[in-house]
Image (tube, rainbow, N blue to C red; front, side):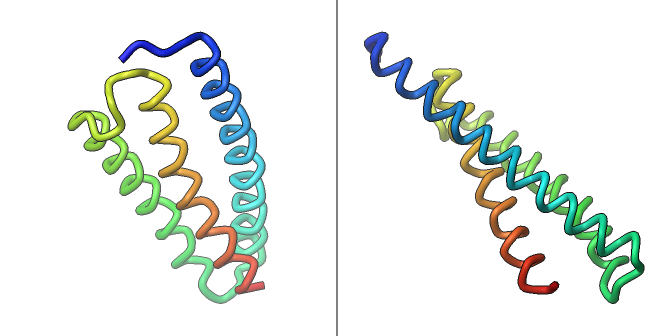
Length: 101
């Protein structure tokens, strides 16, 4: 399906905003995790393991969704889908880590 330049610009603007928020939220998650790990807080070792396993899981999920075309064939649709997936997981981590403080 062909998109108008207006639709594409609006979608790219939304994608830029989502990337910005993903970056902001990810920085918060990194800071909270580093505080936990550097102080040796209870659960720090588990958090380190979780950090790695979550990244591998998310990467695999994105790869499969892209390979199966679940987000469509347009690059902006694929980028939006991947960003939504990562953002959802980052937000869940942020909520969990804030609660654990």
